[in-house]
Image 1 (cartoon, rainbow, N blue to C red):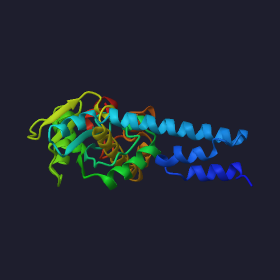
Image 2 (cartoon, helix red, strand yellow):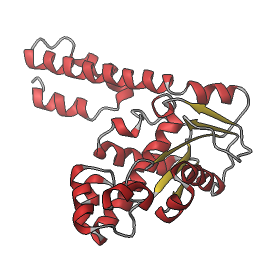
Image 3 (tube, helix red, strand yellow):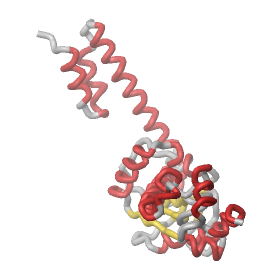
Image 4 (cartoon, helix red, strand yellow):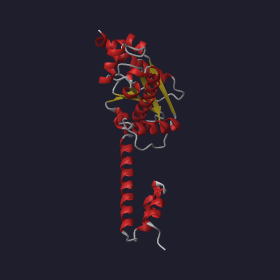
Amino acid sequence: MAQSIKAIDLYLSNVHIDELHEEMRLYYDDERAGVQNLLKKYNNKLAKHQQLIEKFEEMSIYENSFQGQGKEYIAGIDEVGRGPLAGPVVSAVVILDEQPILGLDDSKKLSEVKREAFFEAITQSAVDYRIGIIDVKTIDEINILQATYEAMRSSIDQMSVKPDQLLVDAVTIPDITIPQEAIIKGDSKSISIAAASIVAKVSRDRMMEDYHELFPQYNFKRNKGYGTKEHIEAIKKYGLCPIHRKSFVTNLID
């Protein structure tokens, strides 16, 4: 008796992606329309998986190049929080292990659900990762660019595994002795920088959600400290709270 289409679907859905093509061959001669539709569905799954592999390989060019030069530990570094009116600026540095994490991309291109899933995958498997946090008081004292550099240096200084090479999103970090490569739009071009962007983004978002509990009138859970219309109206109504950047909001409270 032939397997039901539902049973075939359940079986194929549990086959490891590396074995899926071979297992699908078992059903090529089954002429039922439902089975042929299933084969199309799983062929599409294979095609999407191949696209992810190709994208991962494309985004590994910098890492592979430096490893080809004999450098073992390649670290990506990125920051989040340069533009908000409230909250810290956060940097993350990540050295990925050899196991590919398919689907890595600029954190801004990913949904919150995907960012959270990637955050867990990255932090559980990374050779090393660290987070640097610079608070609003320091941002107001030294300006956001210098605070960003300080967050990056802080994350690097905490590492237990010293990188042989840094890949940095867009900027060159002052006062760093480790060789560094600034890559414009690096979070879309390097798997290591993409991983760092995700770790930084998720870490800062979680902080802002905690701040929301302390200062719910600003709805930090939704706006993450950025200057949305709702946030600006709340500042005008309630004034500033301790995590607002005074140097960013002076014109809103005059």
